[in-house]
Image (cartoon, rainbow, N blue to C red; front, side, top):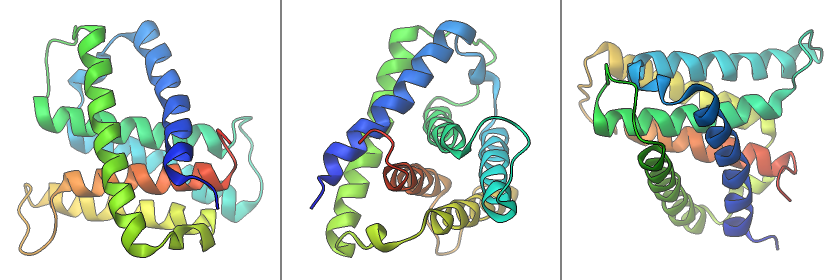
Length: 180
């Protein structure tokens, strides 16, 4: 049986590498984004994945792997923004951004390990397209909560949806044998 914890770490290492390189290229310009804008960025990526899965054809020479990586990174950024709030000053120290990335990816892993224990690795029998659909569903749930100014009657807050998006995207990348 494959080691899910190790596979999770391998995928997050790949995602972190992209995050870190973009930090060098762009700094923390993402600090200006509201979480609703980050939700929309995740939507764009998930919708492109679904379009490619459905059409079985793509016209832009970039497959679904970078899109899943983008979902993970934008979801981590959204969790950071929830903690810090939107910043007009986009000059966050690189070390702080890295520490916050590590914090939230670690929290996502803890959640995944707990759920994975209870669900007995059921995700391994799922299709990548199901993860795409689940991410889209989580996006629409998040948009509803955002449209209701964060108020819910019985449901989890938006942060729970971002964590689930991270974990579904990690599972998809593991299924696509990224980082194996």
